[in-house]
Image: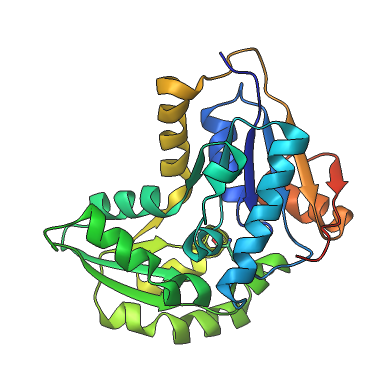
Length: 270
Ligand code: DGL
């Protein structure tokens, strides 16, 4: 047993897709979520700046909340590189990249898999590297496409407007051309746009979110080493670097009633 909390972070609301899966699968675990809504989007930022943000947030989760593991619920932060986070802060760190890709590889029949993500994630080559290590025989044919603008729509709470649809039609054209049968939503914000994305790529393409798979892998880590918490109902702490009342209102709409009080955090400039 280890009653310490699980720490999760994202640039904003996207990591709530992972938090939802963790709450559902591991209801006894305490959870601390940091949404860096004051500095989103991470996608267009230089990778070394994103790495500094990850360091700052991990430091906060470890020093102020004594978390037992940090889940980087943001593909862009993971793709920017963890830069020795686990060693520096003496805490295990997991990301959404490998769990998501493993799920997409299981979902495809044709071997043609699409991955969509932010400009930072796609241009980092993180998914291509992960595919090379998870699929050394090269059976998977990966088509990656960046979708700049998607995150901003979600952060505004605009998940099914005509404008998102028009943008999706343009950005997802290479995915349609590649005739993939599984599409990994390689940004934790994108599951909130799943209906629009599915409309555009076609219903026969399986959309894969990394959230459930990350929760399953987290449970395995807790059960085989880290130590789960089985003491009743877990507590949930929500922290935002942006406007806390917006985080509460939109967060409740996107995640559910577990988001109640939201704590403000003002990161010093990285
Ligand atoms: N949810 C983040 C991700 O998975 C979005 C990053 C951003 O803020 O651009 O990449």
